Image 1 (cartoon, rainbow, N blue to C red):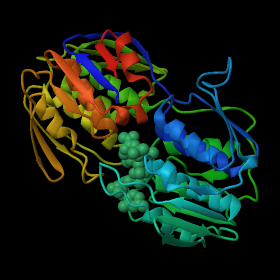
Image 2 (tube, rainbow, N blue to C red):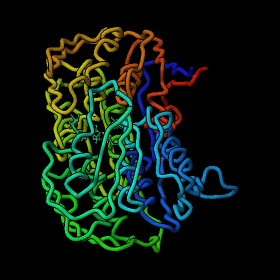
Image 3 (cartoon, helix red, strand yellow):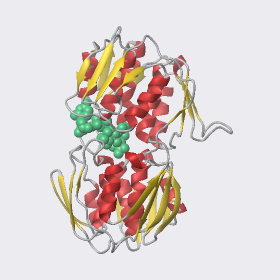
Image 4 (cartoon, protein in one colour):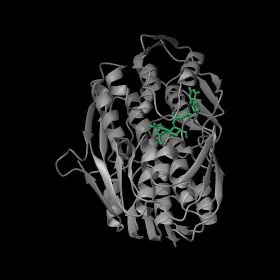
Length: 427
Ligand SMILES: CC(=O)N[C@H]1[C@@H](OP(=O)(O)OP(=O)(O)OC[C@H]2O[C@@H](n3ccc(=O)[nH]c3=O)[C@H](O)[C@@H]2O)O[C@H](CO)[C@@H](O)[C@@H]1O
Ligand SMILES: C=C(OP(=O)(O)O)C(=O)O
């Protein structure tokens, strides 16, 4: 199993190009199932979750061409043609490592009138049920049973409905949005998620002939159409705001001067505001963000609370906690989205951090320095937080189980090396 070996204490300097968003790529790969014809995506990040999603849809009989595999092809391009789809099924073996697989359910049901999709596997950050996806599709007239760990869904023709989800759910909104494009009549999604990946998905669907309004707000209105068509042009996936935020936190914590290219500051306002409070200087312009920081000894502890977009993202909580660990003062961090997303705390403590957890709250007392140790990654963003802590810690840190990191970051260690970090992957 691969590990990362980090020798801390180096400042970060230079430029890094941010990849396309994992959380936009995954629903958009599923959206391609809605049409018979080629859907071309650009700015596709090279990461394990994309590979898993492509394996899943190939298994349905879909033709997939990932640029990295094609001779001389664009490395960031994926072309999917679901014209040959013959098995509208997602088996447990392919779904268990990636909860986002649930997003094949809406498109399959809408286009084929049936789908068999395994319940996604349990995940370290919380229980993560999919009841809202199921309830929404039932409101659209689907007949859904859950048996032997599988969702068995049928619908001769989905019907438009007004759906108010019990909570704001990102993939729930995306699943129902995709299903509604082919439903009969109008669907209104109330309490819809507003994360930037949702308007990005909606724009792709619109380029396929879908009729959607209000994407990016909490009320999305969809007029169903009889069929969608292949988009005329490639769709460019929105930059990954969480990858960008992770590099901002890394530079703020380690100190240095880093410019992020292909990054959207307007998608990261809550994080940037907190980084400024912590003492980092941030400038942003068209497609770039620059961060300058004096690093350890010059950072202030900053409290924050995770919440739905545009508030502070839960996917940035662990990485920002790494800054608070070495900042001056005490920070209180409230995690309101997932009930078990403080798994990195024990590992940060192994590096010398002082953190106490009480339910949804973590209280971090900043220390002057961290000291390198062997730590274990427990989930995707926890891994990133340990990497950031390792960049600051004295001596050598080994981060084990980085398959979590590889799920969602595109060659993170290579990008950090290019910024001057002493980090390498070892077998
Ligand atoms: C692939 C993708 O885009 N993943 C993101 C997505 O996950 P995901 O879409 O899975 O997260 P949700 O927005 O659905 O979850 C929000 C909350 O609602 C609960 N819930 C959700 C659906 C449901 O049917 N029932 C239910 O109870 C969840 O357990 C959680 O407590 O949004 C999360 C919250 O921003 C991010 O951390 C993930 O990175
Ligand atoms: C929790 C995350 O992803 P997923 O929903 O794919 O598990 C994440 O990106 O931090």
